[in-house]
Length: 109
Image (cartoon, helix red, strand yellow):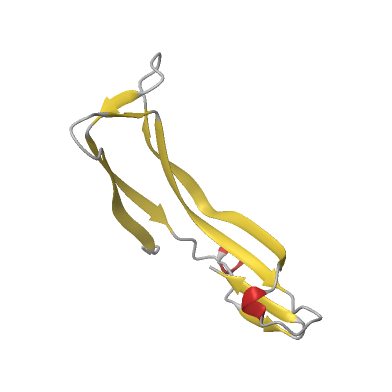
């Protein structure tokens, strides 16, 4: 069985002919979750403060590039780094959808 995955390329480009220093490049799939609690003033949830915020990595972080041992960085003008990130298929590992709570909103992105 083939599991779902994200496939793509990270493109690093300098903004001209001058090379840039690159020491480490990694990529990961992240889940951000915040709970917005309504204010006592009755302000809309969009402008209320965040009560709880959490972030976690789904699956594993993938190392795409690391400078050679003994050098702090490598100078490049362009770099194309292909990646594949497996998306977990186990129910416990999947992020929850956004949901409405009686006293606020839990938003997952």
